[in-house]
Length: 238
Image (cartoon, rainbow, N blue to C red; front, side, top):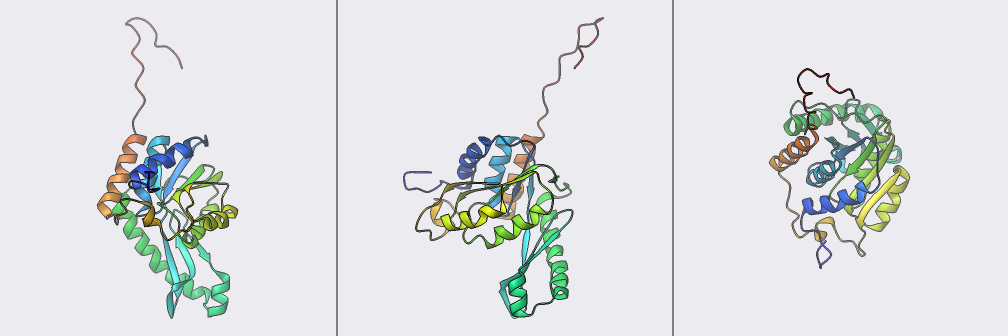
């Protein structure tokens, strides 16, 4: 962060976050980014850990006559998960059949975006691994809560939530959903994520794709091959 308490941009925030996450010493990590703003941040974490980077795409399912009020959320993956807000559904008389039909439409949109961002790359394995969920910040935590609940159903060994900035109350409210949290700044009062970045431009699709490709290139760098044994001598074992 600079002297004004702001991150220069998402990449610099990601590098600072990567240092804090690396100190946790997680085994077999997989980094999961919320697009679009979370991808440049998560890419820096994935590169530092040399871990696979994947996307967690979530779509809200709103109440029919009030779309901004979330009745449920659907999260992509090999086994897509639907997280239902039972209280909202009960008060608004939203049926499960409505949610299931809406989820099908939202999953189609998620799949369209996933193909745009990841082409034919397969989903990263999550079961039994240390999952690190990254975004560029948290405001209320409502969307993140849905993501974390759905992610838990995929059987990770542990879940670490990692963000550069969030209000303290949102961080505390999410602790029950994860095994650990890394949040670099919890400013008070908190007026919005963008106020804590010198550069908080809207991330275009092209930038998302480039960040994913760069992280993949670091992950796929192969170890140097062993030198061949001298002629006439057996190659060393191991």
